[in-house]
Image (tube, rainbow over all chains, first blue to last red; front, side):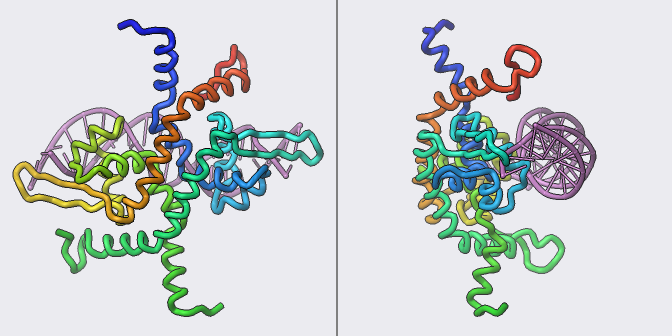
Length: 136
Length: 136
DNA sequence: CAGTATCCCCTTCGATACTG
DNA sequence: CAGTATCGAAGGGGATACTG
């Protein structure tokens, strides 16, 4: 097999960057909240720590680094005392933002229904030892 | 603190179903691909196994069960030989579908840029001991 | 303030083998 | 065909302590 040099670079990026991996980074458990929280302008580390409910310092750092590496966030360090670091979305991430908020709004609209669906599923299925026979 | 009985049930579902968890299920690494693949009508197990690139049988099963439990997929068993099982989106999931495809299209448009951003990041940062060799 | 560094648990996930 | 069962490796993720 031989291909042109332009094809090769295309292929390299495809190999290095399978769709499922991009989606995993961009739509991961924490990434969504972080990107949404960072959308309204420059945001500082502790602001994010507060606004992303339930995230640990460690996970926040890890996710910020990964988003920065993927070119979705810029990290600006102001060499002051105390230090000040600002994160903001890149244009690419800004374009993503509307899909993310759509997702979040959908989740908010349907969380009740989902909780109910789970309750139903759990009450109908797998009554391991007790009364109530399994579904279907 | 006292609240009305309707508020209580609202709160229970909120507790049982935090936003970040919903997002994790719905926008998880595999969920996106599965939901998109299942969108074009009833889909059988092995169809999904083929169309969702890189997923293992185990992970597919686990994710299908979770999506079914959350009320996003219906699972229909036809008691034939060989067995035939069809999955399809619920109305709720169908509403989600457009956001998901938006996300996927975004990922496709930018995967090249992202791969490039990573390469840049890795070549500039953390040249630990050798010539720019770093994390994955 | 904005992180790093460790320790350690516990879930995720792939590989493999078996079944109605 | 459409799963389930089991195992073992990998890494996600919290808790805690320390630093420029």
